[in-house]
Each structure stands twice: as C-alpha cells, then as structure tokens.
Length: 162
Image (cartoon, rainbow, N blue to C red; front, side):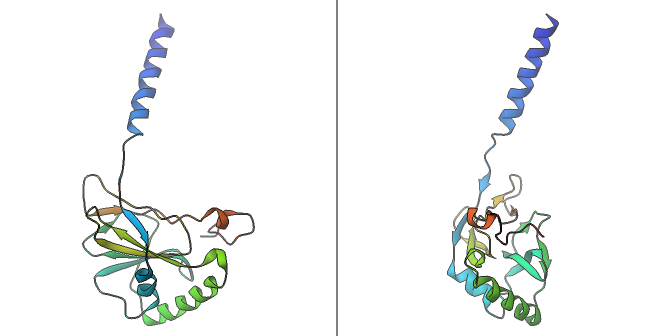
C-alpha cells in the first residue's frame, strides 16, 4: 500500500511538471533583412534604438538594435553606446568574417505581435529566437544566436571562446 501511494505521488508530480513544461511562448517573428545589414554597416545609427552586442567586445558574434519602447530581458547581451571609432573597428571585423563563408554576418529583423519592426540583429550565427514576456508585453527575451550546423562542425570558427 505504501509503495502505491509513493508511486501515485511520483506519477502525479511527473504529470504536473510535464504540464508546466508545455506552456507555449509568445514568440516574436524573426526574418532575414537587408535593411538590418545596412543599419549595422552604415553611420550614423538611428536614435530610436538601444544597442547591444553579444560575444567579446573585440570580436562580437552579434549586434542588436532594440526599439527604446521595449526592454531586453537577458544576461547575454551587453549594452553599448556606439562611437564612430567602435564602428570602424567592427567594420573591419565584419569584412574579415564575411570573407569566410561559414561566418558571414547576416541581418535579421524582430517583429512584434502586430508585425511591426521592434529590433534588428546583425549576426554571424544562423539561429535567432526571441519571445515576449508573458506578464509584460514590452519585455522581450533574446537568447544568444546559435550557430548553424555548418558552423558547429569540428574545426569551424564557432562561439566556443566567448
């Protein structure tokens, strides 16, 4: 009898935990964007965005421009106030990376629930995801971009050193 109670409790706990894991996220739409590429390679940068980078400052993996009406909820991105000197240095980094096929920087746009652009990402990684905080519609969670399968292969210059 005691074993049945323990087994029933374990089963009930497992079902409860599995239900919590099935909560769907309110995902943002992410699309490829030439405008995002132009934003991060041009100057001056538009003032309607706050800017962040992911990776090492001297060799960033990704840049993020987020509409000032939204709050970024992430420990992975570092806020920056870009200067022309930083921009020139990073422009050289983009050129070097773009010469290597598996590390070319690409632009992506982040769209709100009503399909308005709220941000842009310029990254050398392929997979980008973002979702909105359930309790606050103007909070967005953006984990670090992930490499593509080609970038993850042994010997590829992936993100293992950030």
